[in-house]
Every structure is written in C-alpha cells, then in structure tokens.
Image 1 (cartoon, rainbow, N blue to C red):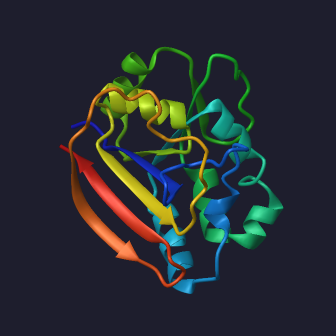
Image 2 (image 1 turned 90 degrees about the horizontal axis):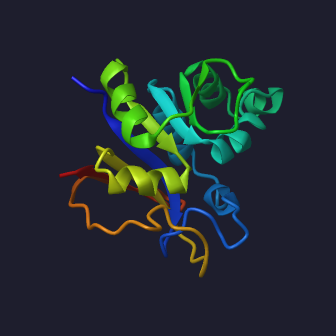
Length: 188
C-alpha cells in the first residue's frame, strides 16, 4: 500500500500562503496560545517524511538544524532534523541537512515511486508550485491547513495554475483561542 501524501501549510483568510513580499511571517504572528503550541509540537512529533521544493528547503535549513531552533522549539526541531526529507530540485546537489535526499526527476514519476516505497506518511510543507502541480496530477491524498486570522490582500496561493476542481471531504476542524483554525480534508 502506498504512503499517504499530505499538504500541511498555514494560509490567510483570503487563501494565501505567502504575502506579497513572499514572506510567511504572518503564519507565526498572533497571541501566544499553549493549546496551539501543543498541537504544533504533537503534529511535528508524529513522524513521517517531508517533501519540499528547493526554496522551502533553503528557508528550513536556515533554522531547523540550528541551536536557536533547539532552544525555541526543541520537540519540533528534533523531529524536523530526524525525519527523512525529500527535496525536488534540478540545482541542489549537496543538501547539507541530515536525512535529506534530492529528487531531480519529474514529479509525475518520482512522487508515485516515493509514495510506493515509503513506509511512513509524507507531508509537503510550503512549496506552493509543487502543491499545485501535485494537485493537478491527483497525487495528494490529504490537505491540512491552519487558517490564520489575517487578510493579506495579495500573495501566493498554493493552487496557482490548478485547472481542475478536486473534490474534497472534510475530515476534521479545530478552532484555537488565538483565532487560528485547523482544517483537514481528504481528496475524494
């Protein structure tokens, strides 16, 4: 049985995962919320593998394998560093982060092979163009979003370029005191 491929990202109320300056800072803004922090830590500690594009990888490697990450978010940092990470890139050659593998082929070929040989679930973080392409190919099994209580007005959508209309079924919703809402959908 193939591993499940999921998307996990934070989006604004108006559906953007980055603002007009390509920043995801809004995802980390807001009032402290211990319940949301526990949710984030437990989600990251759940194991699995990560799939991302080169740009997302370059953002992640600047923080997660650092002493600052271990100090600020030790549970998440430990999990992020231990997880197998797959980076889709035609230019990255020496990843430099433990347990990282570079996929340089075609998404339509590499991702089904990765799903077939993985014994753990795979989660896409960030990587908007990859999410759009894999959605178009029908390869994503589940979509998980944290909706942040902010309107950005402009930015990038995870689904830019998607021409179809994938059918989704609600699996879970959860609201937090900080105003963020978690939504989980299965692709039908």
